[in-house]
Image (cartoon, rainbow, N blue to C red; front, side, top):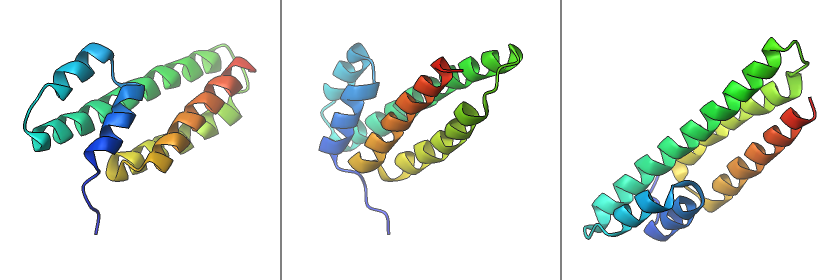
Length: 111
């Protein structure tokens, strides 16, 4: 059974990935359940956008005929980890996703 993520965990994750003006508006909402739902949606959207931007960078390198096997493999793993995070919202999963974003960007710079 999957339990609802804690509001404090969502707020922590939100501070790391959601733009500040959007986060402030979400935190101003009084019903905690609505705030939790909006945080989940905003986190999911922000991570998907960041993933999409990174994927575009990888595909640009591919068009330049560069060897992108490692960034592409990490990108595939990243997609799976994002889906896991969107289910659990555990801080350990979040840290894993952010670390994988950094590693993929670093590998992309080395291509």
